[in-house]
Image (cartoon, rainbow, N blue to C red; front, top):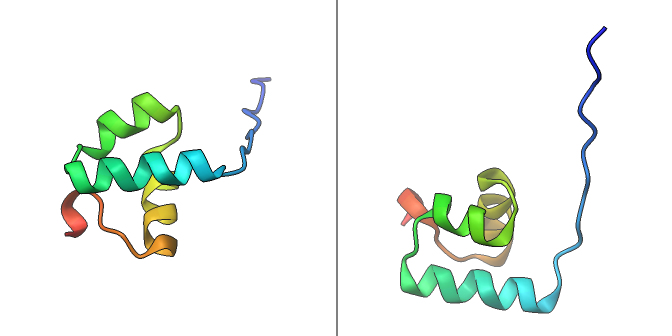
Length: 59
């Protein structure tokens, strides 16, 4: 039987939020931000919605 992948959650620090806002202003592609921050694109988009900032094609 295949092992089930466990999800590991990381809290958003103020430095993480600041970095996300910086990338938003610089219009960095979400895929690139995802690799830099080691978070999924979905997690980045959800946090951007909560913060009220635009990312990727949602501008």
